[in-house]
Amino acid sequence: MADADTAVFVWLNGRTGALAALDGAMEVLGSDYGVPVVMGLVILGLWFAGQGADDRARRQVGVFVVLTAIGLASWIVFAGNELYFRPRPFDAALDHDVTVLLYRPTDSSFPSNSTAVAFAAAGGVWLISRKAGLALLALASAYGLARVYGGIHYPLDILGGAAVGLLAVVMARAFWGLLGPVPAIVIRAARIFCIA
Amino acid sequence: MFSFALDYYLLVSLSAFGVIQIAASRGRLDALVLFRSARATWALGLGLAALALVWFFAVEDRNINDYEGGLDANIQALLFFLGASTAYGVTLGLSSLVNGRMDGGVWKPGEGLSALRRATFARAISRSLRYWWREWRTQIRPYLSG
Image (cartoon, rainbow over all chains, first blue to last red):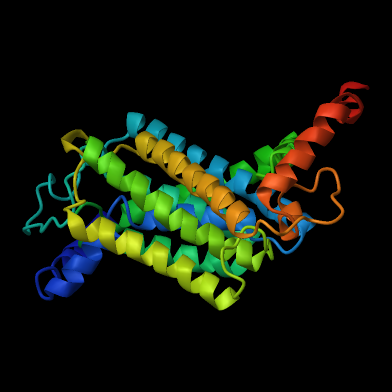
């Protein structure tokens, strides 16, 4: 498994340098400030975009689930990193040179924190809107791919991050299910100030 | 780091303003949009969001670790919240000015954003706050009684 993981990494990272435009695009795609901002904007848009008060309230409850899932995913990765540390590909003793397009993070390679958060956001959005959710799942996958291509993650880190993100969505949904009417009460209060 | 944080705040504020315009247009919140035409609203929204992203990545190298001048995840989240709040505040102010003639007709308590289909934020919030100032005791009673 680890050999296959390294082989896929070496193959993907080995494509760098062939096309400067592709490297540039992957740098932006894998950046901390591109995909996360776009995902945040989609979540913001979902807060306002409902067709009528009931649809908007349903979406806004969904936004609570998304934000909770993002927090949970980060926390799970943080807790996991205390137990297990995997060196980044550029720090590991590989038989191949690693080209690093993105900055060199110092935390554990597995699971990918950025991908966990991206999949938590995408999975949560999928519960609100299938179309937007699928688009964000594709974007989260591309984000993960760019980070492997950019030399800072192995493919298994991305798969692990995606699993953590989607698990966080399930947990966040159950959490708000247990709390029952709390989000509806918060939304009703926010309506006084025309922010919900 | 301050310059980076400011750039990020501007990126979020500008693009969030654009996204709110698009979302308001989709949600038929007519008093929130600056243009009557949905096409113009979408062009403004998408244009602003795209331009902000292109500007952010074009003016400087953004590939920086948080301990070398970049932003850690917590600061990013905080700045995103501040930027989105700024965008909404500017949207409310500008749209209240541009759509000043929309008086809203009949206002229903607890409408929230839906009131902005017919009335500007300035009118909707003044009606809402006046109502809740008078009625808060009777409105919260059901939540406090067993």
